Image (cartoon, rainbow, N blue to C red; front, side):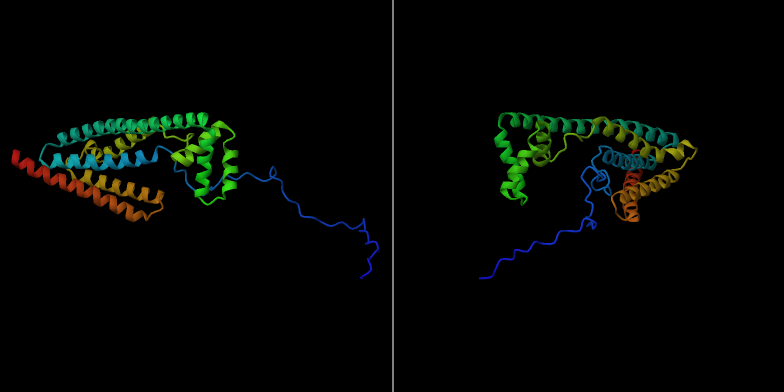
Length: 261
């Protein structure tokens, strides 16, 4: 049998200190917003603004080209362009407002249904949320615990269920007024480009076509840059589409003008 070692271990010298690394507490850690390199893609203005500008340019250019193809006086082309601008801008704004408002009302109605379910069947909703996390690979016991903690506060529970089950953020729903305003202004600005040369004294169609096509290329390039695409390809694609629409309507205007003349 090995004898026990009864010697007393040496005591540390009090003059010698061992440096331990400082671990920052959560309170001392600086707060960094998650994913600062991402753009905000949740706003309700970008899509209607882009769509409105493109639509204003293409539709008014095509409209004015068709009328000019009928060999009418320049002031008739100007009047047509201004009428197309006003009618299109109001129509876009009204349509966008109705569309976004209807979508918002649908989401709010679904949120109210979810709120009632959370009040009436909390255990069932808790199990549903846990099942969502389990389906994503979380261990069942951990999924149940996460669901329980997230459901402790009723409003937080509603937000979590809305995100996971409905795919929406209750605090970031698009505004119908913002969407309508973006559509109105962007359509009007886009539709103004082909009218502008006539307002400045031009009597032929080609300056309006040139300015509108330049605007289409610029819009396409800007959208491509925002969406991390090749700028020249986006600009060229929009220019070709708008030019084709203007060319077709100009030919139709020529045909109808000759037939009716």
